[in-house]
Amino acid sequence: MTDHGADLLIRAGAVHTLASGQAPQRALAVRGDRITAVSADPHGLDRLVTGETEVHDLPGATVLPAFDDTHTHLIFAALGAQDVPVHQAHTIPEFLDLIRQRAAVTPEGEWIRTTTNWQELNLAERRMPTAAELDTATDRHPVLVKRGGHNDVVNTYALRLAGITEETPVPPGGTIGRGADRKLDGRLIDNALHLVERLVPAPDRAQRIEGLRIATRDYAATGIGTVRDCAVAPEDYRVLRAAREAGVLSVRVRALISALGMTSAAQVENLLDTMEEWRDTSDPQLSVWGVKFGLDGGLEAGATEEPYACDHSFSGMLIWEPDALVEAVEAVIRRGWRVGTHAYGDRAVRTLLDVYERVLDRNPGLPAGTLVMEHGGLAGPEQRARAVALGIPVTIQQPLLHDTAEVEETFWGPERVARLFPARGWMDLGAQVSAGSDFPVGQFGAMRSVYGMTTRQTVIGVKGPEHAISYDEALTLHTTQAARLTGESHLRGTLTPGRWADFTIWDQDPAHCPGDALRDLHPTHTFVGGRLIAPTGTR
Image 1: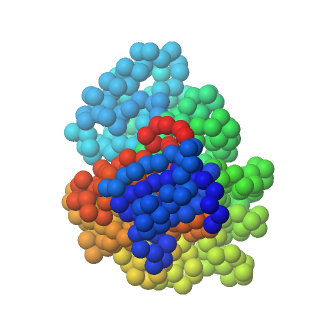
Image 2 (image 1 turned 180 degrees about the horizontal axis):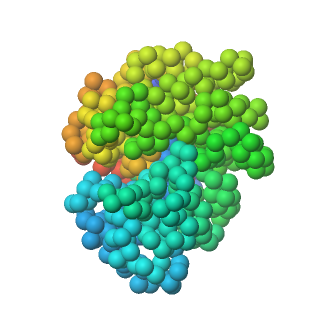
Image 3 (image 1 turned 45 degrees about the horizontal axis):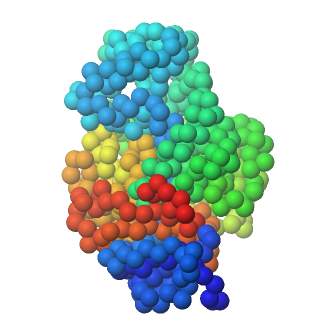
């Protein structure tokens, strides 16, 4: 390279470039938003130091590429940044009191929303609140309590606003909850969510942009430099663009525009018309990856081959008819977009592979990586082999399993829960697999995911240790393999000259960090495009 000066020089104990076969380096130089050089000698790049160069001399530090979270929900994180923080509650009275406190400072009739990253089994009562209990917190405001992306609980005020009564038909692919007395209990699942959520006014643009500022800083603070947001409504994407223009996105965002709730190709065609203006992928910070479909439900409604442990008459639900999904997926690929489809239970995985195989047969020459399986939670050996043979990448989310294992055992039993996210089996087959969190169902964090994949630890102990992978393998699922999934291997994933300067600095080598300490380990610095993002600062 020509010896132009560097804007930034890092000297460290080890710079793990993750380039194939390259030993750890000791120095890394950045100019603009790109890595310009690495050296095995900590002083091997000193010739690039000028009076303008920022030098970090960190002989005990470890440098790694910034991580991707390949399946997360940044939009939910941003919305929750200013919502009632019910994830802090340990009991239902505490939960209700947090809502009551917000109601006291909220004008009557305005909606009250909660954060979504909580689990009912972490409450002392080990259940969700009911509409009647929410009514005790406030009967003067409609209340929307979300848990993850598949479950809502609302109060009576909200049910009344939505016109939901005992006689309301249950939408296909959805559930309207009832208590033991068969009366409405405020619970809504999957395709029933829109009955209420369509009434909730979106926060104003300024509030949403501020939420994205907070949330993207939070991701970066854990070592994440790129998120693949897997449920972005068109209006959400417009807000992301506004946040980008305002300069507040601290991480790179690859958006999957949401077709969730849709059940026909005609609906999808309308969505694709809306997406036409978003084809430009030249912005390194924000772009559309493709379209997101949901084939089955989540923890309570994933489609399984065998009945649920808690209800032998129930095997989850498929949201799409396979023929209709084939038609909808083909509508997307005809427009040149990619497809990511949520398939969690083993019946959903099998059905999705049937759908994808038909699409591939009918559309020869489809670019590799066009069709992706999101989760593949209960994919068994036969299904994994079939996915690999078809060339279908899969994203897995170990933090989801860590946080929800006890909830899932209630529905599926311990044997099936231990088989979730079989990383070892995927990797042994040479699958194209990458990793993420599925926040808000699982907690995001670079090393939280690595810890889970290497230990198979959950909130109720180790589950499926035979599916564990090594630390080095886990790193690739968040770096080199993640960049491959987004089609950006030439730009990201390794710390090599010419690639974007997205990297993290750790005050100890995570490879040698014991057990639970690894789960909560955060970097001391996260750089994205050569700019210090966390801790808060600019160069």
